[in-house]
Image (cartoon, rainbow over all chains, first blue to last red):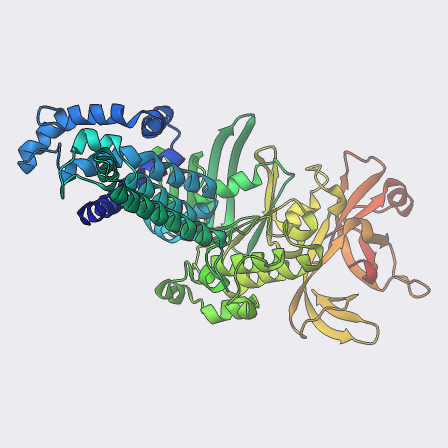
Length: 222
Length: 357
């Protein structure tokens, strides 16, 4: 059996999750602390992928990322290749698609921690960046675990957006869910079964590990 | 020694903080007031956590000066604020909390030895513990240690006894005093309890609905409590006396104050050590001559009547201020005063029960 789609899928989910943590942390932090009036609008935009059919999101992404689109055109000039039907394009699309699954748990964790401990750290002479690394980040541990799991799992299962933006190019954009669809269409149920069961087992295992780990309190052990 | 000069104006809904405070930054400064008087808000303004309009100078250092658009952020001030709820970092052990802000060069410069701090606050046995499951008193001791180890220029304590069980309340105040004395860190201590503040303050500030109602040395403030119509029943004076001996059998300690002697309930202090004695004005009786025998009261202090003050709220009584080297206050009835014909300048004998000290 061809393992390329499995590897590609894991690679896509990993890269997407890591990039989302980098982008999502400051965004979630800002959303958790800002009093700006624009906050609900930003929150709504971040949450859009939760309610939009993936095909709608995919359609607009296809237009934006294509060489004639704003983003795609810029990218073409800088990188020299098209974003659509490429792995990079898939990463960009996946990031938008999985954004709420990463940003929301982080935002909730930052809100729950409030500024009580930060204030204490500040008056002890700890600068904001240092306080973030030493106080806010460890206290938001659960939020990060949830964000990583949900972001990763959600990217694994994506279908509609990928199909619209990435197409079905083996080794480049052909991810697991699309292969499964492909196999079912071709009445190759055996391969579809193996891939589906594998994805099911993997997803369950990851979620189980996370929830077991999450049972432990955040408090430092003695 | 530094001067603390500040003025703050801050509106929060119906509440308005409007303070001007200028004090010598030395020892323990007690800030007294009812809840809602703005004590905590004032501390937050000093720490830089609240941005009021105004200014704040510590000696030559400017922490805030609106006219010059200067506002030093909290992490650059060195004003460690210890919160009512301790706010120990839950993901760190006790030791992790203590080490959080402890930097060797800064400690060395301030002459603070970490081991001494841990010893003075009896934190040794707690070091390896997690912060969950600590008692309120333990949490406050750790928070105090954590603050001292950040080598602050100023220590701000917000109701440090509020979350401490009654059994341990008495342990914390001497520790705060010890920290101020041994590590030479000026302390601003907020409380709504006069007895707590009287026990350790050198200066006292009274706050009322967002403003400073009075401030001065502790005796200046205690003499005038009636005037501020704040806790008038605590009017009195604090004497810094020297221990001269112990009467173990009768469980008494003998102390001396400017040549006169007093007996007080036993205190575990070495001979020669200074102890505070707080004498409440309503526990002082006045005689025009020494009573030689047949009288249970053990202590008599001789002094000259300095002032007779009316108490506006209670017309039947007056406060006599008697100079015994410090302004001792005695609350007596007008009738006694009239019958004894006491006037300013008279020598009188102030009696106070040892049991009431």
